Length: 200
Image (cartoon, rainbow, N blue to C red; front, side):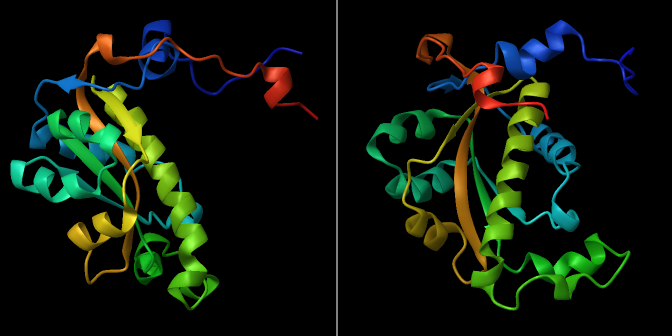
């Protein structure tokens, strides 16, 4: 049987930029302007989430003052690279995402589909903000940026510094800029298909 695909596959150079040769960088240079960050968001926002809930909230930490607010929350190994990166994105998730669900998913009244407590909505918010954070990485790579996602930080300190008084909680961080090739480790192996997947 001949395989039928609706869309043409991306060319090798594009796949390399997004996946095959893309790396996680530990040192960054360059500049990332507001226009690029707005383009970045305008790409990532189209990624699918449950009931189009889009619970992720993003803080693009760019100014010296904002970086200093972030510094105390960083683990020791993440301080230098984060302070030097042109931009660090805080990927958060809004536990009150359901307040906007009737705007985002107008087909039915879906607000009642979610638990009434913030704690009950945590799993949905965290899962879908993680998806959106992954879309952010792909969108950044598609715009020519390099990425350094990381989780080594004190969530409570970030939440207090950037999300105090809100229902937003931090998920993970992503450094953005022009990656220094000297900062990457030798590429680690990945599991082959037959160890990680199956077709039934």
